[in-house]
Length: 225
Image (cartoon, helix red, strand yellow):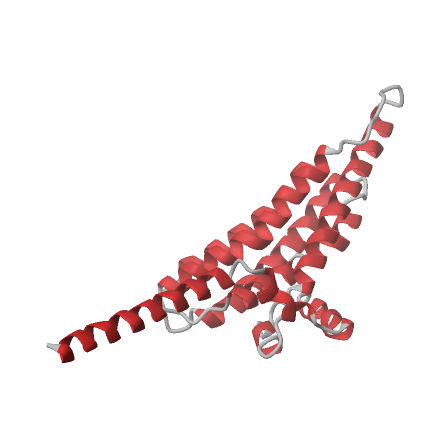
């Protein structure tokens, strides 16, 4: 009887320990201190990863960041993109008003900044997280930090694109955003492909393409109408 009680007590201790460890691991996702190491990255490394995002056909971005993924690029790029599209979007509407009717009073629309922040931060954080948890559920060994890193750098192309969208030729602006959207979407899909090889998850690749392209169209339609 004493042996059975001892065995039961032992099981309770280990069960509690496993539960505590699982809870600790889960809380780690929401702890800021867990991500400090991902901001310790050299400028040269960030610039090299930015250059890689302009060459989507290689599809080897995860190989480059395998030992040292960073979140600095994602945060910096997302924040820069927010201010760039908000400022240049206002500038584009100002130029449009000046061309159409100089008598119309124009004012800076601060709502552009709010919309840009919600859209860009929401997309940069939630989309990679959604793909990560979905692939985890499907049995893939995905990495949330690597996904955040890759998706973050995929947004950089929209920063120089925003400057080009100030060109007052609508047809040319559509060509520019379609090229940028295609390049960014290809970068995401081709790199994501390495996580689904051997699995029939083509729908995920198509979804990543569509979402990235939809973001490009959103930037054009909302901020540079």
